Amino acid sequence: TGLGDVYKEKGQFQLSEKYYKQALTASKEMKLLLEEARTYNQLGLLYKKMNDIPRALESLSTALQLSKQGGDSAMITTISSTLTVLKFKAQNEKETESQLLANLGTHINLGDRSEEATGYSNLAQYYASIKKFDKAYYYLEKYKKVQDSLSGSSIILQIKELESQFEK
Image (tube, rainbow, N blue to C red; front, side, top):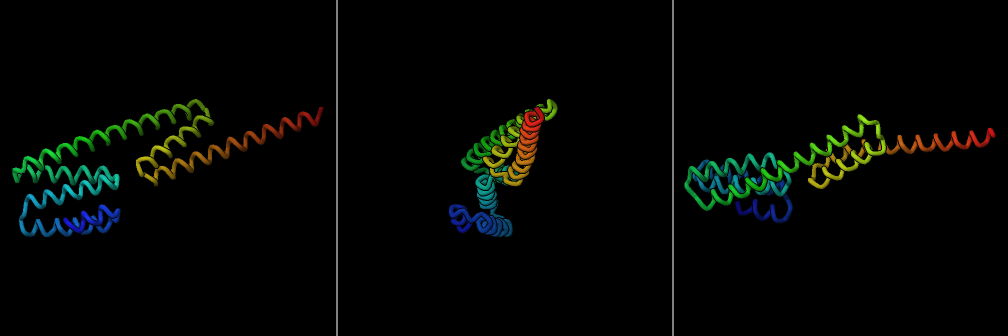
């Protein structure tokens, strides 16, 4: 797992993953159960660093299972702690996401376009903060569309106001 560790620290996650997977293959071929567990643990920590929570949970769960089979109580404790933190983080993220989406839905149902725009902005910021940039971009685009619509409505109102003043 040495090269995987080096590249993980350098932020070169794809290379890190490549070397961890090579180490995983080698430890499986040599039937080194605890080395396989350590490598799954390192992969899980890499995915955690990449904010890929589902793959982190999967790798760490496998590492925990293998550590139990190998009887390494220190590794079991370490992996269990990491899993607990990740599960808590994943739950909090789901709750935050659900609340933001519910709030947005309420504003849409109420027809409050200004607050709808704010809801899209909040979701974009939230997703960017957890490094889910595809979703952040999606909600940023929605925000821009609503803002453009609101700006257009504001200009139309100003023109109507000017027209009414001109007609007087």
